[in-house]
Image (cartoon, rainbow, N blue to C red):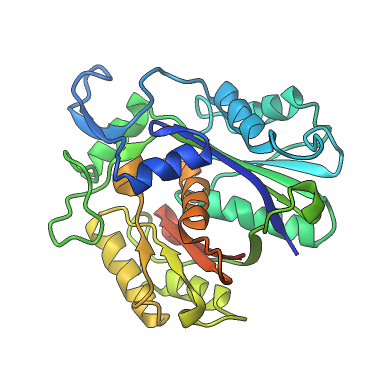
Length: 325
């Protein structure tokens, strides 16, 4: 089995997973209007750090927080792989910052970078699962991170995809997405003893499909997302799922596609978690941030809990994972 033995989130809502989930429970949002953050960019609504961050130090800090409670240091071990999830990286360079993160922790392995549009954070977790199940490594540190720039903001504005106000996923009045900044880490291991004595979430299933539909628009029938959901439902039932973490970008086509895919998979009666109104779209960090929040929000003391996290993205990519405790 693949166990989640540690995690952390650093966002505009706080430092640490518990601080972030507490902010969500209180209804707090990191979204606000920026009028002059970048030169020559029209005002936009986003969830950004108050103080500009640097990619590598932010990832390092997040990993250190995620592993701080472990019974031994796993970062430098040859049986540990570091997987970086990002859509942009650091100044459009993906592998160099990943190498710097690995070097900081003395990890001898060439890190893996997963950059697959908005699904990167979920795809990175699936990559970790496959590597651990294949026996190639004992531990996997998945860190997702993206920081916003003038290039990204203006690019989304050119698509007319940004909402000028806080986003409204699945609302008939939705106007588009908001962007966000965050770093998030999940540590997976084949060894539950590497964590603590408390019950641990296990990564049960993962699936990736591509619509092959359009450069930016999803399949109108949600075909790829539907296939991912049906894959991860194998071995369980819709009724056993406690929480479904959706992508929920609040863009017209994405939300419509997700609704269709969810109904086709028989999950329309499951409570959903749509976190873009709290964090914005944190791109390469989104799949990791939202997985952690789903686990903490769905945890039950009296019985087994199961969650599904799904994401979709440009190029027709779709991914989903199922976790259980």
